[in-house]
Length: 228
Image 1 (cartoon, helix red, strand yellow):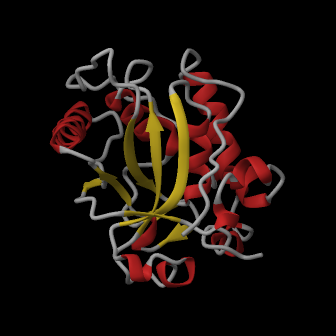
Image 2: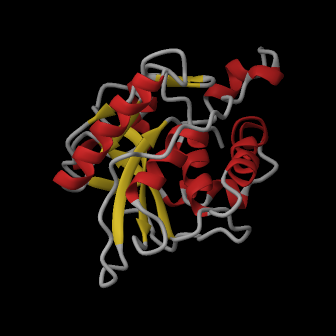
């Protein structure tokens, strides 16, 4: 099975594998973050950071996260299928929808993990061996609060020059999130020996454990959400 992310494996095998996975770089915590009330225990965040296999896998290992669904955001419902999204002209980005408990982890902390270990936010319309607008770095806020936090945090990171380059991450309008096909869900957990996963994504799980030990959990929160 050659899937959206797997297409990059053809190019990857011709490269020096030691340089195939993005390098983790911990960024400072967000200065501006959501105000947590003890009564709210479920919120969602939608991020796009390249192939959704690895991004889903990272956040499934984060404490306070209860569900992570791979899918598409940025385009219309009619084009939210792997074959169309892979053409790169639908407006969609491979994305994940994260359900989390704000009393255990905040939106700003999720963004810190997103920028630090889930992907390289300085790459424009690509991640590792995968290229195209469907692999862009993007944040799709669910509300004005998330939008303000994301915009402020991107400005904070750029000002800190921690990456040595401006972030390519875009803050976009969330028109809808559409779950990907069933075979994409929990892909990292179900296929730990798949070459693309071994080279590009398992190192991200190790980075999460190393850089955020208090937020890492060994047992992933596997999604039960099926595709449309």
